[in-house]
Image 1 (cartoon, one colour):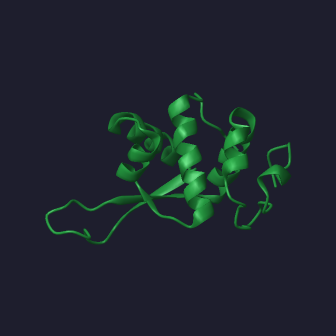
Image 2 (image 1 turned 30 degrees about the vertical axis):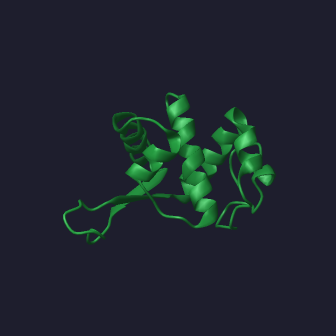
Amino acid sequence: MAGPLRITSPLLDVLEVLITALNSGEDLHGWAIMKEVKRSGPTVYGVLDRLEDMGWITGEWESRSTEPNKPRRRFYHVTPTGRIGAMELLRERRPQSLRRATVLKPGPGLPNRPDALPQGGTA
């Protein structure tokens, strides 16, 4: 599995928010991620673009705006590959974030506890 070429604080911030949302079953759009990580739009969307290019997340436009005269939102979801990669990176660089996260929902190829993820990078 190929990982990001540069591991930056904004990347780790966004991954932490995405994994937390995944654990809680929450859908996130770009503005909500920006608000949560307290970083600018260009920074957050740059990270989201990189993660999407790597296949770690997918983005999906909502079919209609929930409010009149508002643009549609793009919701981001972690892929199975992204889930494993994000957990590995966060375990290595921000282990405290995994302790704060709720227990993962069991999924294909991933144990249901972050601390049970194999050291070799594959589940």
